[in-house]
Image (cartoon, rainbow, N blue to C red; front, side, top):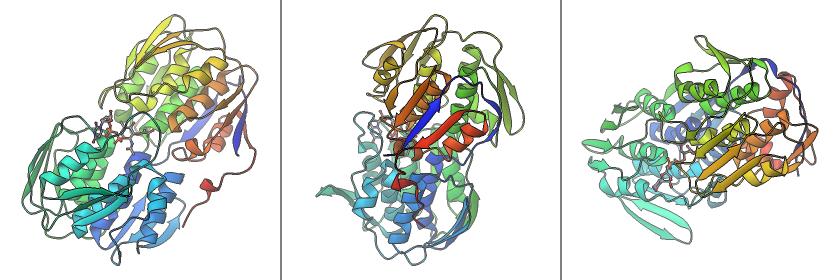
Length: 427
Ligand code: EPU
């Protein structure tokens, strides 16, 4: 199995360019189904979740052409089925977006109950609530979720909980419903706005994305279009955290600074100096790391996907930090690995109490999920000695060329073990 071998201790310096946003890409790719025509998607990250999404589209009859490393042309005119191949859909959580997109275009869809990171229970009741509100019925058979509707009719949906996935899926399903759909208590993450902008490029009429209420006037038909995906705020935040913890000097490029505000504010509290440019930020640190408290919340709160990286950072800060996970029930599993590296962290349910220690020690560790894996890499970069991070396929679901990007910043990091097959593009 492939692993990363990291000799810690170097301060990161130089420039790193952030790739397109994973959580936008994995929604925009299924959304091309709604076009029923040709779409050109730019700034697509080279990560295994994107390869899987493209592979699914191709298996379903879409014509795919890579125009360059980060640009794909997808023609969904001749999609021949509304069933997503089971094996592929199990490989990633975001395959649930095929439900909304297929329902929107063909009025029926069948997708395997999704896999992905294990962060505790991950129900999709709010997705189904939106589908049924606009006229669909759902059923579950042999692990496959089926939704179908003779007709989709605009409706009023009030979500019981703020959900990124349910908000996006509701938009996908209702852009071609008859009449107007109003979605309330929706998620406001930058990738929600990105998906809405993409749908509008295809002829949809989606308004209010980025606020608590989204209004969608159903379009009779949609068409192809060209679109550039926004930069990945969590990838950017990960490099910012790595620069801060190693006391480096890094310019993080190809970003939208506004999307990073919750992350920037906490990094500054922890001791980073952050200089903002139009499409970049420069991170340095002069003093020691300082403890601070964090509670993860839906956007514009502090993002749960940055929580593991911040825990690592605060494990080397002066004082005690309290980290409360407000989104997922089980997102501290990586803490056991950090303890093996010398961190002093106590977890009780959704709360972690982090007592800063003077240093971390290299150790063999295992990535339990995508962000936990990145957090362990960051811990390793700041630790004394050698760390081997195993199960890196989790990391490569969401971070493009992470080894190369850190190596370019002066980190002593290389791949070891047997290469993982998930790294191969499937198109
Ligand atoms: N929830 C429900 N019912 C639903 C949907 C969600 O109760 O029908 C609950 C969840 O159990 C959770 C909360 O609502 O407690 C928020 O879940 P949400 O639906 O927002 O999460 P998601 O759409 O499944 C996306 C990202 C996650 C990220 C969360 C929160 C994608 C593919 N995944 O998941 O990203 O943590 O939003 O921001 O967009 C990651 O990138 O590492 C990752 C896990």
